[in-house]
Length: 358
Image (tube, rainbow, N blue to C red; front, top):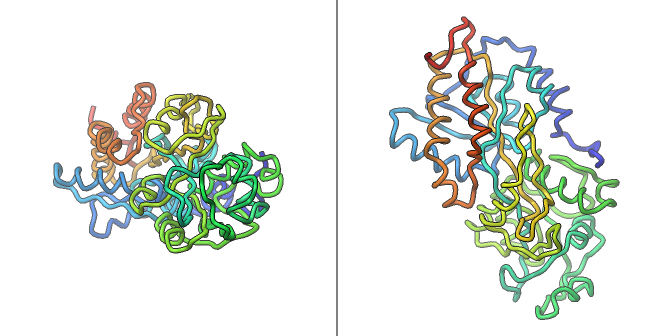
């Protein structure tokens, strides 16, 4: 698969630009906590469940925690420059990139990314779209909602005679990275022309910022189609189509279909990187993303580090049920947790003291 030369948010950019630049900063740069004891930043993909966790955590602990949903690329920049205690990204860094800046990365949550449409007269979860047709829409090759190719697979729907307006993300986005990764898997033409990226040179459409911006734009624009993390689609009551998966079945986005894909993950790499797009299985949703949590192995402030690990441990101990309520799946695979806790046990401060007390 081709990596787009316009992808300013790809892992190569992180390695050569962000990490290289920020690696030159002093290790002693403090975390600017503002009004919080624990500060995180990054992807909007997992923001709804992270906010829920932080609210519940603060009810149980005398600690203040804040998460700033600024996008995966900005989250990487902030953790690399040590202005936050943890970052969340939907674009996994490679092992060499992690080693370069002494970072540890592991999977946090899994959920689905879904196309969303605004089609007057078409009920939600009724429009069928194949991977080929979705790629053609995003490339501007299929331009009308009543195109014969769409009518053929939707014979019972009254598709409106109106142009298709594509809405895409403006900033470096992990949601875009996962979505274009899927398009590159199912369309050779997309792969050759646009590739995979947190930002790509979209051939058509209007750009918006963030998942909330996407939701508002699609909801306000008849004839539009965009892509969004499923929780935002539910929150904003957007029309989600049925998407044909690798088993040639038309499936709905739901926690059940996300789990069907997520259960196939093999978290064997040192970086834990795993692609969950276009996986087999009759009930697998084909566009599933992973949000990864990133922390520094070497910590500047011992107390800050202990407070951060207290939060992260609380999430893995108490967060699964809350995640399911919002259609996320907390990655609580035992092999993952064993490796994560072993890494926590090795974390030290700049004086060589273990963060976790023996």
